[in-house]
Image (cartoon, rainbow, N blue to C red):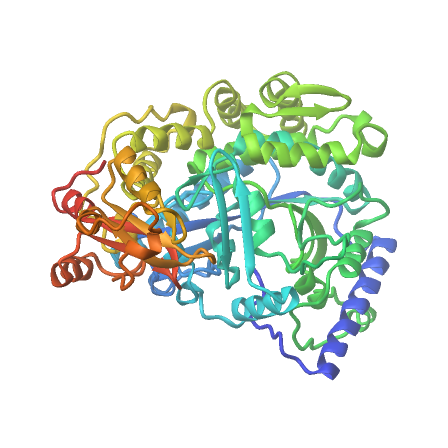
Length: 624
């Protein structure tokens, strides 16, 4: 759980005091490492489950705080968006039935969340990126009103000096500028924690980095964002760009993002990784700290290292080193942050067991990764796996191999050995790793989503297809069959009447013309494509007019020759609507002005168009 009592506006004196505590925390950590004061005789696992809240029309809600109040359980906390919540599971000592215990608690808490959500006509969905999130749910009104999130937003914007620019390219392409960090809220994860003996931390950390690519590839579950088919695990690129504090300039500068895989194998101790974080990344959140860590040690107490943990919480390594205190004893652990939520609890637990099995089954030859594998191969594998998931070809220990073959031939046997080594029940090993094996032979969550969405798009408009996909994900989750057993979606589900706003039914694939184009080009294009309405854009790409077939027919009668431009004949006074305009209001506007279409704009940028045909299809329940 992140620290919520923070401040981005401390004066110079208080900020300096925080930084002194940060340095004292590092000194205390190094002292504890040197004097054996960090737990090394026990191993625990833990997890954080993020999930989405949707209404009965499968769209994101804005009621996380009300649902949280109804749940009334300290295991739950808010996330940055008001349509997400998080469960912090209890740490479990690693022994025979630890995965079963964790799974039982997670199912119990999700059932509690479901009951609390139902009181507010809300459902819960496990999804790496909820398909039905639209630009509308990324406005500041959807940000959870707590000091941490507001401060984070303010500081990152201040450091950047500009709005946030996203550019993701997969099968489709998404290029957009946004004014807040709320794109980060699209990401929903199942974060894994594994306690590590301090003397083995660097070797374990580097191994965690090495296996990240193939593990991510077989767990991918986030292929869609804003209706675009992007990466198999789009969360990776989205999170990096949405929490990027780097400002761009004409100078060529090497700057490491706050969301990072890293640039080299780790060395030394966990303290060296924290030092690198502090050296690379400015303090963006701070607060007053009550006690000095070294003084706490001298009094015989175990310090919480509050300043170090707060700063570490603003540096988003995909494999994050963590320090914590439990039962009066300090421990260190690795937090795996790249695993997506869903598709089911069973899939998530299989992912967890696979990762822990690999971590504990590390062969002795991989004790020093710097002598086995180029770090840039590990980093490239991670990015490639995020892009193409299970279909990825990796560069593994000097050879090229597919994710499927690597998992099947090397990593699964290694994970079996690792779980046996820590004496996990054979029944749980076979059950959970069997899911990974069959998923490797079948479909990942990302592959199932892409196939289903493409099938829906053959029958429906984009918004209806996203609703249908979210509904299908939810319904399959209720069965708890793992994703490799989910059937291919062929039929057209009953989704209609779920649309409320113009943005839900508008057409986004549009033909436009420039005001300086010849009018004959515009008329020819309209004939070729059999379209009756064409928006007109100016030199800046802003909407400046509209061509309609009826208007052009009347212009033809004036017979003024073929030298006229679009600007000469277009309608200049254009009635427009916004994405969030109610459909009922759009219908009234069309009737009032006796027009057949309404361009949809965002600050004069054209984002879509709604026509009488779209209205008719919506009213008569036609999805295509």
